[in-house]
Image 1: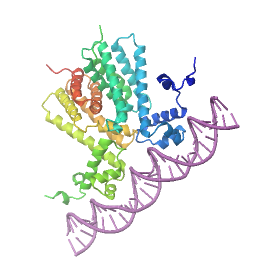
Image 2: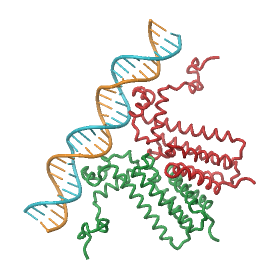
Image 3: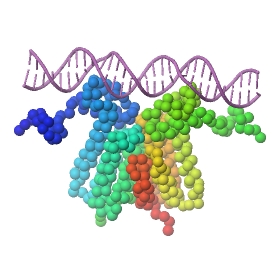
Length: 206
Length: 206
DNA sequence: ACGATATCAGACAGATCTGTCTAGTCTGCG
DNA sequence: CGCAGACTAGACAGATCTGTCTGATATCGT
């Protein structure tokens, strides 16, 4: 059996499995923390490379420009959120879909209560990128489309007669929850969102 | 009867009635358009004074620093939104409170569908200012407290048994509506938010 | 006419930003 | 050993940003 390294440029699988440079990872981790905590435009390359402990030339060998780093940051957030929620849904595969929805929102509310929570990275990034055609905005769209689809799917399985309409409402609640956990009291929002879901979701099967 | 100008430093009324410098107004109008459309950090002073047709010294004679301009921008947004919504509520003084709520949300959804809509200026500004103690963030808080209070008040008058709980939900819907009108399809959201309100609000009196 | 005030045009300083480039170091593999 | 690739340190260019300052011009009340 060949080691990963012995398989070189032998197809897409090899490409995907290629180990990530530690310098690149450090840069992306640092950028993720800073971009999220302070905003994309407020954080300069110099600061990222200083805090990541990476030389400038190294940075530019991994990312052609800052824009690509921003895009990589958001893309990773998208993949990460998806993986997290998908894992949660898989854990609850036996539960009724309505319960899965409740748990997803509960998880989001709990996450929004953690120290350092600063809202939804996609909403925040969209605020800084007005051009809807920008790659950053396209990742935001991808994230929204995924979440909307997931909501519609779960609503359908929960017996909602109009899953698409309901998904729109759950999207409102999701965005409101993210914003509210940043700007208002996250602890209070936990019960608020529970209450909202009770009013919005189709009643649990008797 | 004295003219406005003949009354000088004769009390708070005179101060409030003092005419605004046209240059200052031009600066604030230009800044409002640019900050909202492109974000605060993305727009520099040079650009604002160029597009406002104002000299740099003039700008700095009216605003000690950019921060004050940003604050003035948000403050004016806050006052403007309040005035608009209060005027709407006054127009509908005869209507039941439930109807007033529906109309407020309908107005917001319609506003969010206009070309150039780029989300809620307060949410967007908050995304760019991480420090909760910053004056900008305090204006954001003031706006949120006002809207939350208005919602609770109207819900109370609409016969909701738990107006505070309901106001939290309406806050979720408001934030979600603003974000959604920016990032999704505003036309579709009009019916979505109507639908959500029907599920959330206490039923209309028979 | 005169003085106060507002405004304009633009140079300037100092910081910071992005991105390029040079030159040297370290590491692992054949 | 010898070489290739990844990395480091930091100078540098060119743009841009905030904020200050000088000096000229226009307006307006008295």
